[in-house]
Length: 569
Image (cartoon, rainbow, N blue to C red):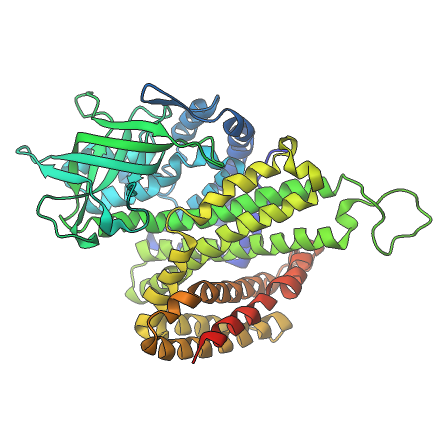
């Protein structure tokens, strides 16, 4: 079976749990964005994803991208699907109307990309960086560059890349050696090699816009010496720019996406932003990409769950515990507690992850469009602290959870027929790119929490706790976790001042503790959503994963706290 967006779940979390239309309509830009409009957009998105994109996933994996003579041919159907995608206006969903966009909230784009990633991760890698490239060009490029490239990127007519990594420099961007030599006409000649560049060569769009980190001749060493440049595949006069693909990688998964080794042989580029501040401009792309990678994790886990759940409702094996022994018919897999535990646990991660990811997307809309400073400051605090947690925890769960879903199939899951093994392979890279999960954990604890003595995270968690209504078990569990986590944070702040290595040892455990705490909060939001609908939180659809959360997920919090506490003096 191919992935199909479960639109009722999207609508329930957006409209009932998060009250997204009401939160958006206080922003002057979105006063006319109501629930009906949001439903219409997502319903059409779901139809497009389910009918056009999802059926190409298997072909993308089995045929893959083909490389010959410096050119990449994408799998059958990919080019036609992309042309339909951009011509229907989907890349431009959240871009400004003056740039060729539709001016809709970013949260709708977030849901769209969750669907796309779940349906066909390889294909989705191509447009995945478009909005980040759009924001980077819009806020940092010269007026001349914006006039030439902004609308093409906003609409998706031309695709874009993010060229950071080099053979000797993985996540350590301070080691970048690519050189940028100024020319008399104001352009630069870029020379160097970049690796792991997604979509740097393909046949999906007529042009590709490369955003490249490079070093000016007089630049100091380290990350502060980097500048950002825009180098198109084809120059404005139609000539081929010498930004060339040397080969594509043979990968564990994501065969439908070309991962390129790029050689820049004095390729022409133009500086984006201020010399020496390339990382500042590039982080606009990276921050947007990290939320999208978190959404990839949620979407891929949902795709795996859908396959496993459908299989468990059809396949019969043995008699389930407690079943009448007089019946000779084997039980459905879904009746076995071991399988229910797997399925309900993944469902808890998916649903809670959506609450957190969509909240983050809403907060990004507030940062961009709210007229008052205080809501923007609160939104920036949320995004700064929650984004690395989402990226790390939900991509890890995508891989581990999809592997668990494979278990539901038994031996059938290990063969290609059912498609679950593709999701396991495709999902693994999400723990690595856009900053490895270890880097996300260090970013959270070392760069975000410790510098202000834990004040920002403590404030965020306390505000979430104080806003809870009711005293049910779930709410009380969350409040207890907040108290414990805030106290632990204070101890870590003190201990880290005496032992500089300590936070690096426990950063992963700390991020997991925060993730489980936020997941508990997300489920309180679901549980306390008032609705008379029989498909609401009182139904088995939501009660079963909530029970799995309490039994199989939340106990991890105490374990992580114990691990960290054992390292404290």
